[in-house]
Image (cartoon, rainbow, N blue to C red; front, top):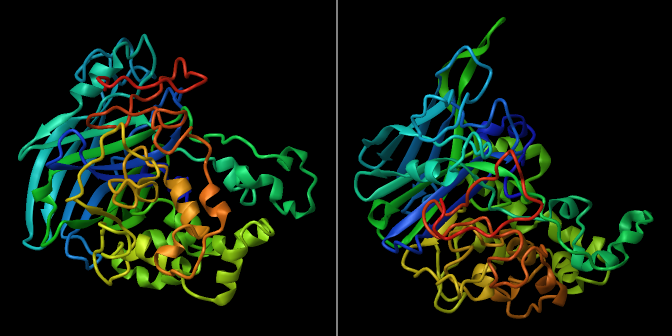
Length: 475
């Protein structure tokens, strides 16, 4: 998945697991940028009696690099605090939760937001005691969940907005196929199969969304572009989660205390970077490093293992890619997309280049106008839509398809005019949308068209068999 359980250690620590990062010019407020960082992956909606929440012992941060050095100049930090209001019950709530201060809600969580300008040292507390909404439990416990979520959208000084709480998972991917030895369902009949008899693979298959009907915890922040801008319009964005070095345990009470400096235990810039490109032995280490130091991982971008495997797994399907891999040439297209941004002249009329420093970050050119929803392509730039990934990332962008096509060589002709992409590279698809422009198709319907953009979370009482289209006005 985008970064769900992407490394051995963080898979054991879901409240600190950075799962998805989004950065885009707000389509309904184009003088602002929306930043969304998701944590706590794969939430089964009926997860009681101890429903999901952010970690009180974790610092969550969204970092902005606006001078191209791979280090943040602006940093937003989020710290959470949970309280038990009714210590005599085992229940999350002992009656309907009809407001954010409902006395029936036993386990409330609030948070503080701080903005730091690392160039000047200025620290501003933007808000404290801000209420998270409860998890979406069901029709008796949370009878009007949309209103609870709407009340948890907080206005901050300077024309900013913030929301922190449970949302429907927006990322979609055919995880079961991809990690079954690289099965690409459109071409699964051509898979080498390693000698295993698998008649189900003898014809193309339809995609299956592995993240369907699950929830996530989301930190969404909308700020004026002036909050983020440096000398130019392009910014780099990444998110982290940090824990203190020492945890203290009481024999009868579990973990109680923490001490020492905070260490980064999770980070995320581009989707699928650690998931697909970084070797297993380095994944925990990668999570601890700053993007400015990503030159040490650049060889895994320039020579991705998956590009080597595809011609082996699908003999004769990717002949041009096989020849390019055999030549030993580095993948300059992937280095640009993932590590530096795309410079001017590569894609006519487009650039999101931050400079020569190789760093895994989302790169957003804030001067590119948002594409109207009716004309948007969830294939982003390769679908002719410069407002989508890899120009930042919108909630509905089909990043798994985009990145797999790029690794398979679809973007190589941009930097090597002599290379002709294999036809199969452009045919790779998660199979979860009916067309590149249909963002209301299966797998991408759990969105709303205003802040915080990710849709109402699934309720534990009655998870539907199929996604239900979000209502534009719903929170």
